Each structure stands twice: as structure tokens, then as C-alpha cells.
Amino acid sequence: MQAWPDGGRVDAWSQLEVVVREAGMKVLVGAQITCDEQDDDRDWRLVLQLLQILGRQHVMGSIDNACKHHSSSLFLPLQLATQQNHYSLQISGSSKPSAGIAIGNEMELLQFKANISQDCIQRMWHGGYFLRKLSERAADLDALDGFGDVPLTSVFGGYILSGSPFVDTPGAMVQTFFKEAIKKFGTRWVFTINVYPYFAPNNALDPGTTDQCSASLETDWCFKKGCNLPDTVALMRKKTTMLVGRDSTLWVGETGWSSPQASTLTGAMTGCPDFSSQNSLKNYYKNFLRWTLDISDDVDGPDHVFYFTARDSGNFGVMQQRANFSPRAPRQKLNCLPFEDGRC
Image (cartoon, rainbow, N blue to C red; front, side, top):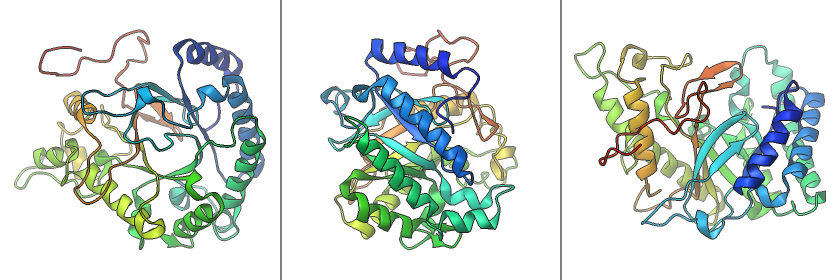
């Protein structure tokens, strides 16, 4: 979760600047929050340097007319998320601010990480370290010419939905954090959740089988009411409404599939070959591209969605095999998806 690894940062930034400017890209930048304040501050200094290199016009903050979602077409610009050095695709579904600066990633899960002390967890939440760093980062952005309007968020996972409305335990004081962030930043604050049906704990093998999972795939692949992702996003939207009312912005920070099987996949789906197949990855991505962002008749869909990822990448040292691009052939087109007309 660094702005870029030390070894190739200068060259990587130079190449990134050229690509972003020539293609007119917009970039979502993330910053780490860990138990090491010195390293967090070092990472943030690099993030600020990168922001200035790219320029405000290339850092996403408001939605362009060309990026709006219409029933007739989807505009999918390439999204570069530097905090995990991966590529993703985005869809915008409203005229609300589309993306900005993400401070911290799935901090509610920090308590479950190996080698994380209880002192760190206590300092992070009860001690106010996370909220303090968010405020400091916002102040730095306000002082940076042109960046005072950039939306602020922190990306969370589905675990936060286990509370009422959000989890608020000593190990993950997410609801308290949200309330303080909203009090300080108002509508500048954005709710962001990662949703991965691939890792859904309720995925199960078909009754009477030991290696079939067609029922789970059916609910995981689809993007309509009653399906895994839309129902999760609908629940998130209802919970944000309970906290702040209907006038809030909601992003899906990540969704995607894995093939071959992710090393972090556990449970029954490890025994179903179809689940982590290339066909499943393609079907999920195909259905994602067809999604209108509708999730339910009684709640609004997400305002912005990111698809993780266009290539394989690493996260906390674990490889994530979610590629639509081959890392060995960076110039190739997207893998051929099974559209009706046979196009790739």
C-alpha cells in the first residue's frame, strides 16, 4: 500500500505521468494507515509528490459528462489505483463526486492480521490515530493548490455490516469513525465498501455433490436483486441511510473474481473446480459490464464502482489472480469474453 515501491519509483512515476497525460486519464490515489506512524507519514509524503506530478486535472474528484452512465452505453476509463499498484475499471452511476483520496484500506480487519499487537489496535481506534491521520491528510490536501475539493474516503469490507448499523467494537470502531468523519467533512465524506461474492461465506456446494457449485455461481455471477453483490450493496446503502440519511455517496471500491483459485479462498468452494475457472472469471466480468448499477426497487444503487483488476497483483504479499490482461503480454487486448457476437 505504498505510493510505489522504492526500487523503481522514479522510472515508474515518469512512465505513469506520460501515460496519464497523453491518454487524459484520471487517477485514484490511496494512502496507507498502519501501526507505524513514521512509515505512514513517509508514504503520505510520496503520495503528495505523486499528486503534484500528475496535477489536479488528472486526479479524480468530479464526474465528467463523458463518464456518466447511460442506458445506451458504458464509458469505462482505466483507473490506476496506486496504493496497491493495480489496474481497475470504473463505472459511474450518478453526478455525485466520483473518486478522490482513499485513506486506509479495510482497517476493520487489522485486528485479525498476524503480528499486530493489541496496543496498535487500541491506539488505532480508541486512541484516535486513524481519525487523526485522516484529518491531517485532509489538511494537507486543503493546503495543496486545487486539491481542497477532492472527496475523502476509507475503504472497508463486508465485516463492517455486522453491526447496527455498523460494527463498533474495541477492535473495529467503524461506526464511531464514520460519525466523526461525517461531522468533520460532511458531504465531502464518501462511504466505500469492497464486495467479493467470490469470498462469500455462505457459498455452498450443490446438495448431494462433493465438487459442484452451480447454485452458488448463479447467485454470485448475477447483478440483479436477489444476487450476492446487489443485495450486499443494498444493505450498505440502507445502513448509510440509517446513519446520515439518503443524501450520501456510496462507492463499491472493489469487486472481481479469481482464476486460478486464490490462496486465501477457504471453505466448500475450494472443492469446486468450476468456481475458480477461467469461465467463471469471464462470466463475472461479462455480467459486470452489463450491469446498470440498479440493485433494488427501494434503494439507490452505488454512485461509483471499481472492478479489480485488469491484471494480477499482490496484496500483503499474497498474489491475486484476477487478470483480464496477461502480465507476460502487457500489450495484448483483454482476454476474449463470450459476447453473443463473438467479439473480444
